[in-house]
Amino acid sequence: MINDDLGALSTIPALYGAAARRMINKMVYAILTSNPTIEGAALFHNDHKNLSAEALSVAGLGKVKAKMARQKNIGGKEALNIQPAFLIVPPELEVAAVQLISSAVDPTKANQTPNPFANRLNVVSDPELTTATEFYLAAAFGLCQTIEVTYLNGVETPTMESAVQFDTLGIKWRIYHDVGVNLLDFRGLAKSTGA
Image 1 (spheres, one colour):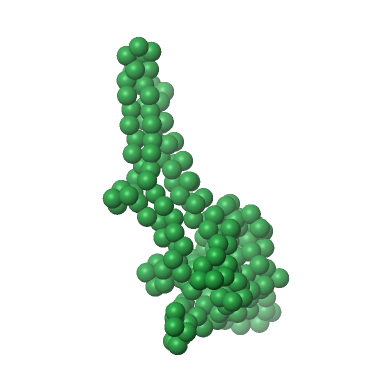
Image 2: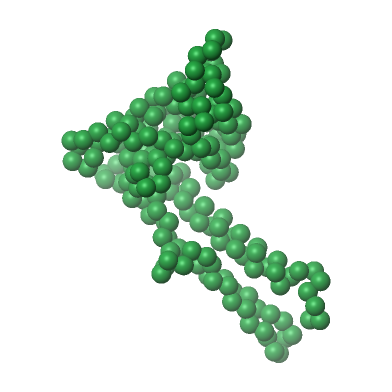
């Protein structure tokens, strides 16, 4: 190779890195959508008091948020008053979610009723969520542990290695990333299936 006019040597590692990030993203959303068992029931379950059937609206968010606030500690003796920080939606709800969170007034009312969620939640939209009516609320990082991404020896970036192949006039690439995703607690997550 005389030079890298086409950028192959810099493009290929960048594509590998992007693929690794998508893999981690997919692993996290697989926990939300597969609804695994934790503490004797599914992650989102009436027994955990974190499952609703509310529409994406001020009233619907209020009901789901109230369920989060009423979560109790493991002993069931203290209310945790968990407040949501993230509204997680599929792409089909992204525009409506952003409009709702950005609006100073309740969009469903004809008068100037204040929107208590105005600029209080961060909207996260991801195509890994495939049901167009479902949305989730999640607590802020550090407030209540929910889903944890862990890395071997704290290495958060993929390891990429290349080797020049003497006999084929080529370069071999390999990438590996030692990462795991774990469900820690259900209390900082709530789900609505939509109305």
